[in-house]
Amino acid sequence: MKKILLWLCMMAFPWNAVAKVNIVGTLPIFASLAQEVGGDRVEVTSLARGNQDPHFLDAKPTYVVALNKADLLIHGGLDLEVGWLPPVLVQARNSKILPNNPGNVNAAQGLNILEVPKTLVDRSMGDVHPAGNPHAWLDPRNAKLIAANIFQHLAQVDPEGKAYYQGRLQDFLNRLNQKMTEWNQSSQSFHEKKVVTYHKSFTYFADWTGLNVIDTVESKPGIPPNAKHIDELLKLIPQEGVKAIIVESYYPKKVPEYLSQKAGVPLLQLPTDVGEDGITNYIELIDALIRDVKKAVG
Ligand SMILES: [Zn+2]
Image 1 (cartoon, rainbow, N blue to C red):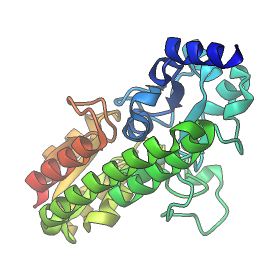
Image 2: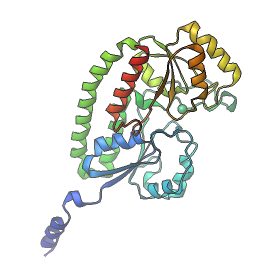
Image 3: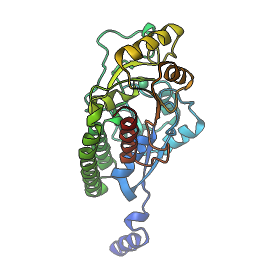
Image 4: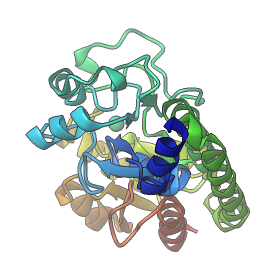
């Protein structure tokens, strides 16, 4: 009898009708990488939109609801979301996704972190990321590791799907490797080309492509530019032969526009996440960055 019941249950609920693993990414980029690995077995959402500043989000009640129901939370780690995520996590009352549980994916785990401060960080230095630069995903070598991190956790949360996730991860890595050959070729012309970016969001992209970010529009991390810094940049840009000013889509354009006009160098507004400019996945994001930077500096 038991066997018949079990069989009837299986007929009524084939595996694809079973509740999917509910994954919440703090940012669309993490949700998107989770979709690559998770395929049909997962349901992914993102708290932020692609055109929002990941450092400063207004924690909405919908975030609490989403995290309360999540099986897996993927965050940037390195205090990227420290300004808004911790109180939301407390309110969500979901022990599965708290740190040190399989349901909590720190995307930065195992990455080679750049710009780790060598001295003790204090407020006079601005909003320095005290554990190093968290904007790591714009280097595809890191995207591979982040996808592998997501796989490790997914396989623990949903062990029955492990082989399926493994296959999807491998397929994503294969596609990424193929694209990287093409990107490495296209970005050859970036080597040592100097740019100024608004925030240090492109450090890892620059480290990978050879682009040289010589300064930021911000006077200090997280602090809008002051008149003194703007004057310094106006001297520095021609002196150093800066090729372009790059501004992330969510930062104010007024000062970058002024610098671009005054110094006569192109202003480049670039996405840092999926969900902008019709970009739907990781490969499209890096495709767009390589294409636009090449147009401006290459
Ligand atoms: Zn930052």
